[in-house]
Amino acid sequence: MSNLHSQSPQVSVIIPAHNAEETIGVCLKALMNQTVPSNSYEVIVVDDGSIDSTCVEVEKFKDARILLQKNAGPSAARNLGLGRAQGDIVLFTDDDCEPTEDWIEHMLSPFQNIEIMGVKGAYLTKQRGLMPRFVQLEFEDKYQRMAQEKYIDFIDTYSAGYRKSILLSNNGFDTTFPVASVEDQELSFRLAQQGFKMVFERGAKVYHLHHPRNLGEYWQKKFNIGYWKVVVHSRHPKKIFRDSHTPQILKIQIILIGISILMLIFGYFWRPFWWFAILAFLGFAFSTFPFVYRAFRKDPIVAILSPFFLFVRALALGTGFTAGLLFNLRK
Image (tube, rainbow, N blue to C red; front, top):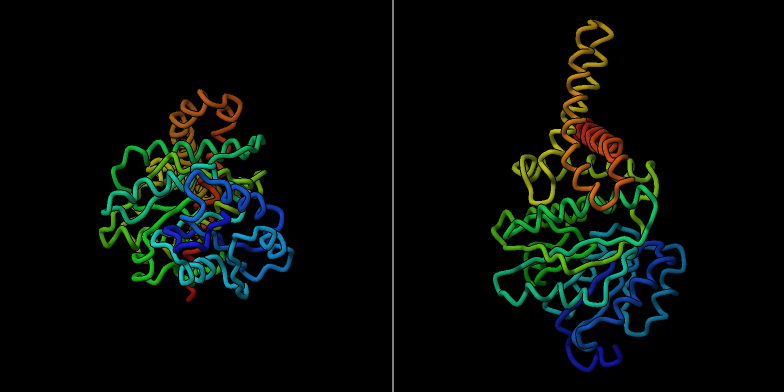
């Protein structure tokens, strides 16, 4: 990228970073070796109040711009980068992602259609643990669904692109989300509500270096998503019923697990309720068969464990959503 500043770049890649000394170098090295001309894009890292050597690692890459802010969360960091971006197209990835060499090329392809305002890419993983492999199958299951949609309403910022003018005119990311959660979903829902056209580009891939490594990390991730979903759905209530990313069966599974737990509790007062708990749990087990079947063709071992992982997913999301509801009712 030695000619980066010889002309105004057409594209700006923005990476919010917080205590990312172990991964930011991998991310930047991948971005410095893209298939598009080196002077057609710039790379901006926004350090979100890191207390490690993230800045030192970024400074090793002379063609990466670094911006500093006090710790305010990824939404504020992305907005700061957005305000300084020179490109007409802004791409986002995360500090623990490694874009493939043709990532920018694939992200830009849909923007050749002037009607397209946003693009979503896909995750890959090199992790070989059981939990990361299951998480990857989860994503691929959702990608298969999204690939059938002409337009989408759900863009995650690990591989995201927008026309800068659209983001600026809509005040960018909502900074009331203090941590990485569902702030990217809220933005894409907001834009979709106004009729802006967004698409899924499966070829725009990034390796995620940190899929949840164990059940505890997975639970925490899903609990946080469920918790912050309350805020998103309070602003976009129609998305409770459908969006282009969330499988409808997942919502049914959350309800079935909730019913089974309530019936188990009520059963201590009147035992026939336990039969309803058993029926609800059997309904949940039956609902996992399609995912298990699809997963078995790719990873038989993970497929066998999938019903348990799907149970944890539904329970964590449901518990997080309930906690979010209770917290917001207290306000």
